[in-house]
Length: 485
Ligand code: GLN
Image (cartoon, rainbow, N blue to C red; front, side, top):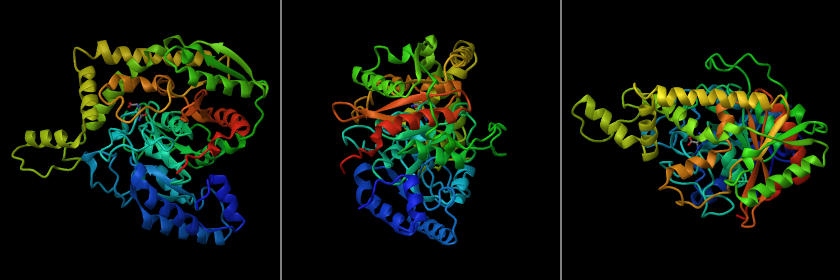
């Protein structure tokens, strides 16, 4: 029987000699083999690599090296390029693509001793909120198998409470780490834009994409960021901003600090039960001496509309490379000329949601429409950035729900894309502003579905998220409520 280990507990166990990484890794692999077919969390299990890395970690630990993430089993969302291991972005377009290199962030994790169990499920090219657009089919929510796990990173979020790995890497462009974390009772970390190098991670919308992770606890989230944060010459959007020691913020006193509650994050579109749980969470923090005040981000309501112009525009540009020549598999049919090749490759390779995004983006960028859509959306983005800057003059962090509602039913929203898009109404504004955010477990609805508390901070102030998140978590420990599997 596998325990509900955190990274911290495993590191302690290793240094006390309680078990080896090989023993632990074998247990995770066994559990994966047994239960993954039911939950569809991993789309590819890299058993050989995992055992090889675990053996290497054991050697290092025998020599006294217990640093970083030594011997810790993890999953990687299937958009992280991994040398020799198929990486598909869960799209038929990339089936069979085996990268010849590791993304720099993957290399950093490997160098820190992490053990790769395999690749986790995601919506196709990370476009979605439910993992239902994955070419490998939906992942099931660990707390209710009739519900979605959220998305796009439903696989990485579900892996953690199911103990299919101790942590899992993800990407967050409009909410894809935080929203599934909130649906699956985990901690979901979205960093400041540029804080973690994106090179070698398959792009969705390049001005919004960020690399983060799903963990059980806030402390574990800090431990992973201590490894992944930094600059890299292959990603020119990583600034020369000082990398802090994020674990130093765990358990740091929060009394006297200020929380802002944006009133737009508590309006009628938010389920009553969700609102109540979040207000309970705020009360817990209030009892620890923080000052709480209502604030306003009046243009929040334009976030989704602006995002669904800017992000599909960038998606359409990024998807242009999948033409069967530069990237993308040629379909197994007769092709007579170049045009037919494009049509067949893109027609068969992309799923419906990708085609929808490419059409929206191409339309918004086309001459005659550019000013009315793309340019206007960029102006809205600037207004949202200014709004956050203004409000952070007055408060240290902002709090609200991650998602207006808990996990919804599989199939419930597939025929209505707009009802899917609004699921990210409360995560998208911070993505547009490039600020960091974290989802922390905040309890369960009466139906037993997890709800996440969203904490947002100014750019490069990830430390505040760990400070507030760990203060709240130490009083609640909802992460200990694992699904009955
Ligand atoms: N759900 C949003 C979308 O589909 C965000 C996706 C993401 O963060 N990768 O665009």
